[in-house]
Image (cartoon, rainbow, N blue to C red; front, side):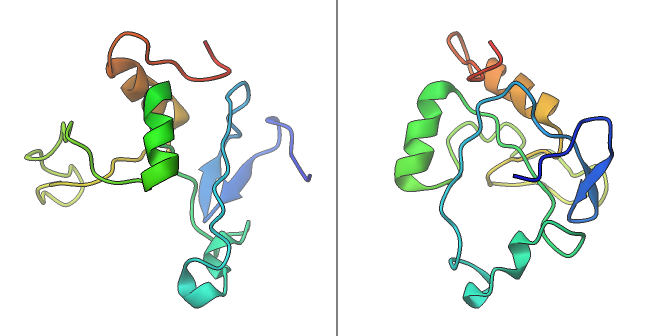
Length: 119
């Protein structure tokens, strides 16, 4: 499937990408859903989107798969300011370019929060 060893640097959307080795990955059918159906955002080169990770509990996965990725009640950064722009972050779905950050957040969601395949 064209997987590359961690020894060779990879990029997705012009950003460094490190395959989440040891994690359970889920794929969601999005082909034809965005960009008026032309799928250019899915390209594996620098013109596509960069990879982002969303940390959640194992139980939270089912809600996401059934209802979509929506802002939840936790909103830990609702009134914080973005370090780059100074703007209030506000309500939203938080993702990170770092798998480690997403894992830490998932674990912070309470007892029983696990990363499938890593714990």
